[in-house]
Every structure is written in C-alpha cells, then in structure tokens.
Image (cartoon, rainbow, N blue to C red; front, side, top):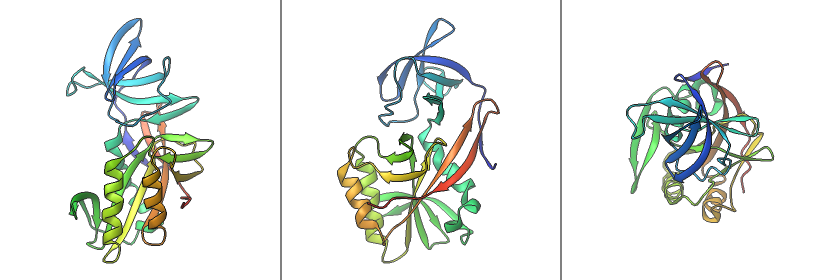
Length: 225
C-alpha cells in the first residue's frame, strides 16, 4: 500500500470529555491530560471511554495532539489539515488526476481560496471526512459555511476551468460517499446542483497504529444527490 504519512510515537489514552471543539480531556495511565484536537467537526464517535492515540507536541497549548481515535473497531485519523498532503501524495493513484503535472496550493478564487490549482487548468477543493454510517461516508457532520462558500465559488468557475471536490475519508470502512443532508441541507443541495458541472472524487485512507503509518486505501463512488 502507498504510504501517505508517517505517524509520530503514539500513546494510548481514554476520552473523558471534550470541553470544547479543539480540546480533549483524557486519561493516560491513571493521570489526566489535555490534548489539542486538530479537527473542528462534530465527530459523534468521540464519546466517554473512546480510545484516543496522542502524540507529544510542544507546539500546542497542552503539549499533546490527538492523532487517531477508535470508532468501534475502526481507526479514524483526526487531523483535518493533513488531507491536503494526502491528496497531493495520492495524485498518481487517482485516475482523474494522472493527467496533471504541476500543483499550486491555496489559490484565490472569487471571494475565497481553493486548495489546489493543477496545470492552471483545474481547481481542486479537498475536504476531510470522518463520519461513516452503515458503510456510507458523509460530509459534513455539522453545518459548514466554509464548505458552502467553496462549492458556490467552484460552481461559478466551472464554465472556465475543470473543478473538482475531493473527499478524503480518514478511515477505511466506507464503501461510498454521499453529502450529509441531515447535517447541512444546503451543502447537499449545492452538491446536487454541481452534478455534471463539478467532478467529485472520494478515497479512503488506512490509519495503522502498529506500523505508525497512514496508507492510501481505495477510491470509492460518490452518490450524487
């Protein structure tokens, strides 16, 4: 399997509570610690007692960063910002993107910024997805103004360049992807409006705690609403 990331040394902890969006209170060897959570999503699988793997990180307020959590028996990679690196490393593995050779990051578009511009021909916005229900990956898990703004900008630009939205499923138990209309009906509506105008791609990753790696999983179909 293709390696997308190497994980730092990890310590296993147990979740006590999530005091705010970016903080976890954890128990490690009968001691309590706080850890930075690099993901602002609702993450409904983060419940009391959930196993969470943390790394030491002196750049964070608490000295610890949450890296992986267990949802049942499935490992979920938590850091949302790393999906852009995953996508760039997976370019040659995704048929839709093998034709492109040059990559620019964080390019302005309309009143926002888009994650990638490929060969000055194609815009790509990448989203981190951690929620899977009955084998279906769903994004978002809470209302996303930023996500809607990106879709609107891409819809406007789709007459000038190819426009992609890529969903990186940060776990390996999804068989397909669909927008989460129950969490954000407007985002789902915009995705439906984009069918035929925007190109949607989704792929899974495989977090491996034992080998300290995150691997490319597989591309999965996107169910257009």
